Amino acid sequence: MSLKVFINGKLLPQEEAKISVFDHGLLYGDGVFEGLRSHQGRVFKLTEHLERLHESARAIFLKVPMGTKDLKHAIFATLRANNMKDSYIRLVVTRGVGKLGLEPGKCSNPQVIIITDTIQLYPPKLYEKGIDILTVATVRNHPESINPRIKCLNYMNNILAKTEGINAGATEALMLNKDGFVAECTGQNIFLIKGNELYTPHGNSGILKGITRDTVIELAKAKGIKVREDFLTRYDLYIAEQCFLTGTAAQIIPVVKIDGRVVGDGKPGHTTLELLEEYRSLLTNPEVSEVEEELEAGYIRP
Image (cartoon, rainbow, N blue to C red; front, side):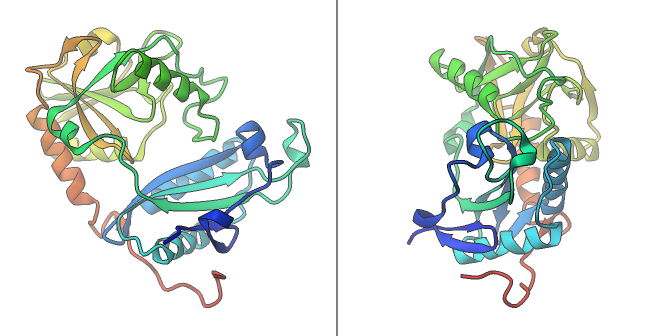
């Protein structure tokens, strides 16, 4: 059965889900997005994701044409139309159709697109064995150029780093910032553990402050682990006892090798696996995950 895609209030078969070639989201990467997860019909930290979407939009002078409540209705309607309880959700807002040229004021009708599908960044066995990462030459965007905290549609910086890592045979690529400090991987935040302390790059290191990142910090503090957000170097990674990456799609993936150096004993660390188990148990927790609400009559047109 063909997937249904939400575009501006309509649920369309994926073959008919189209936007104009003059949309500035396509022409210039002018727009924002969020990646979310649903588990057993619950969408994890839905409100937090939508708050970040609106923050990203405000940062680029883009007015999202739907409020938070309407976006929630649309997400649940799309999940229901595709009969999906466990899904990866891609919510996109583009600048809309405009003339050729960069001026955003000449665009009209921002497009709201919701895709619900499946995604698997890493095979299940890698969550048991761990992955290797490699520092690449591609530097994370300068915050005063394109601030990485804006989750925008222009992901070329990440794509170049990802390609560089793939060409070098690594599972994932690690980017440094302009000052040589550790930033993040191509779509994941990074953590390391040394003793009973958890380290992760500072929010001003040129990173996206991930929803999963924040969740892991909360889980670690609840376990009595001291959390340090700091400006980290590769040396800090090389002497780490455990290391892992976090992201909505990746969840928590252990890292067992960095730039050819074995992390700890070369196996996923005990604390890492504990955090992964606790994180997964949160995904259907009603305190942090929202369920489908009653849709307003006539809101979604088939």
